[in-house]
Amino acid sequence: NVADAELSRSLSARSLETLTGVTPEAATEFPQDDLRTEGDINGWLNSKDTPTDRVNAKIQEAAVSGRRAAAYSLAPTLSANAQEQFTNQVGFVGRNNYYMLQAILSWRLDYNVYATAQAQAAANNVQLIRNERSRRALEDTVYEAYRRVEAGIAKSKSARAQAGAAKKAADLAGERYQAGASTQLDVTQAQKDYFQAEANRIQADADLAFSRISLRVSAGKPPKLGQQSGSSLPIEKQPEAPPTTQPVDTNPNNTAPAKPVTPAR
Image (cartoon, rainbow, N blue to C red):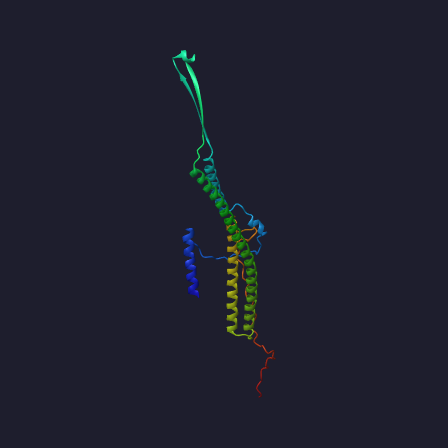
């Protein structure tokens, strides 16, 4: 188990370094979540400033522009020009310069242009459906992340209660062993159970912190936990309570001490 744990730690550190480019350091303190809820779920579902929403908005804008350009190609075009000409034959027009204005209205009826406009309109409608589907998938992701936070809070509460009970059991086993009412095997088993419960508590808090970050990333918010975001307190190292020790009872049966015997002369 120790070898597997060390292997998992080494591989996880390597993967994290590959993804981020930062060499991870060994953790010396573990997150202590304050078990605060994330507020109303509608506030997370109604977030419109997510990366997915921004990408869909740009794609929709491009689709609308393409549809508009294809539709405008069916409209008639109007061109106009003006000319000023000079002549030395003033006898024909009565002056040496004259102007000419010309306006041309043309309308091109081409089935290819019409088909292109219809295709662009259909592409715009398809993009609207894609945006709606993408938005629905995003809301499902946020909803799942929110529910995972709720489940993580319940698991963390349970893990902390189990860790507290296991610590009391370990302390009690130590006291019973010192009093001669328990064996070394019982103490070892109680300490093992306490260590496992404490490891489960740390894992539950870490999973809860990951769920909170996933919720923020899905909703397009900064993935930072703190009191301002209403989620988690800063990391603090919880001091361990010193084990209680009791003096060893050398007379567990409460018998009176034997009086010294004086030899008869």
